[in-house]
Image (cartoon, rainbow, N blue to C red; front, side):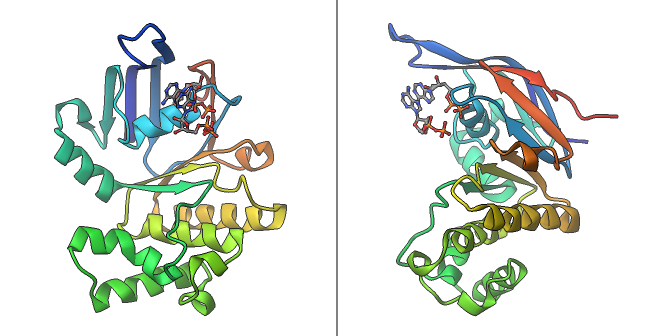
Length: 231
Ligand code: ADP
Ligand code: ADP
């Protein structure tokens, strides 16, 4: 069962301008539910653009994208925002935490936004998530006082908050030393195996990529490897 399906997806920037450039060319791609998938390719090949499209942060110029069997082209902006908020979690290289907030407050954030206000239940779920990523001792520390690896764990806990079916991670270990990178990678793998959450992870680290279920490679805006699930 595919959680994500792209058919003939093209993406151009600066459409209609003299400098219009197509950076994704007729992408066909299928991501199986429950997969733990690596997205690799040279810098500038279109990985972030592809992640933004799959994550509903940007729309294809042409072609179709379905999430859990639902074609997204028919959805209006409010429906897209709702789908993104409930089905997709994001982890970025520069974790994007609010540095003056505590770890707990950062993890509460998507739940507070969805609920309209904070609650004891939301705080408890945030603390449970921080426990899952091994951060109970620093749950009330401000993000700015945490190490890179700790901050990335907070970002993963936050990404898990809404129980999304898909987590998109853009170089989540890119700024980390080898040991912290290993911990963050293993944490995502454990979560994938425990909850069945699908992960799509952009990485330049081939040692980590080869430990994923499948490697999807993008070169010059085309998929050159791993277009469909194996077997
Ligand atoms: P990667 O993530 O693989 O490094 P990107 O998706 O960031 O690749 O970029 C693919 C190409 O699209 C690059 O040539 C980049 O300069 C261009 N690009 C990315 N974002 C924009 C944008 N907002 N406007 C114009 N060009 C862009
Ligand atoms: P990455 O490390 O993922 O390749 P980049 O440093 O290429 O990211 O790009 C960072 C941000 O700048 C992205 O949001 C991307 O869309 C945007 N961007 C990249 N290239 C261009 C460009 N040529 N024009 C405008 N925005 C761009």
